[in-house]
Image (cartoon, rainbow, N blue to C red; front, side, top):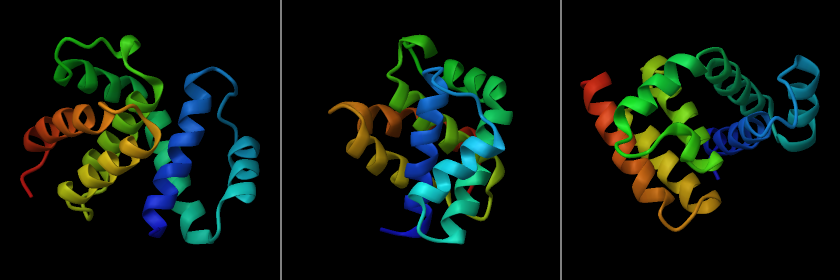
Amino acid sequence: MGKRRKARELALQILFRLDLGQENLTDEMLEGFLNENAASEDIKEYTRILVKGTVNNTTEIDKIITEYSENWSIDRMASVDRNILRFSIYELHQRHEIPSSVIINEAIEIAKKYGTEESGSFINGVLDTIAKEMRKD
C-alpha cells in the first residue's frame, strides 16, 4: 500500500470518529491516533494535511457535496461515503499537484474497502462530476 493511500485511510478513520461525535479534533487526539497507527512521518504528515484541511473546510465542502449528489441529502449518506467525499473534495480543491484521476481512483478503492457494495460507484459518480467542474487536468 502506498503512503498516500495509507494516509487517506487514516484520515477516513479520524474523520469518521469526528463525524460520529465520538471526539473533537485536537492536536493531542490527532497525534495520539497517528502514533498508534502510522508507519512513517510522511504518512503522518499527509494525514494531518487531509484531516485539518477537511475539518477546516467542512461547511464549504458539504455545500459542494449537496450540490452534486442528486437525490441524496448529506445527512442520509453513509458516514464512510460522506467522509471519503469530504477529504477527496478537499484534495481536488487544494492539492493541484495530484491528478484528479488519482484522487478519484483512490477514493473509489477506499470506498470499496470500507463502504457498502454501492459506495464505489456512488463516490465515482459524485467525484467525477465535481472534478470536471472544479479542474481541467
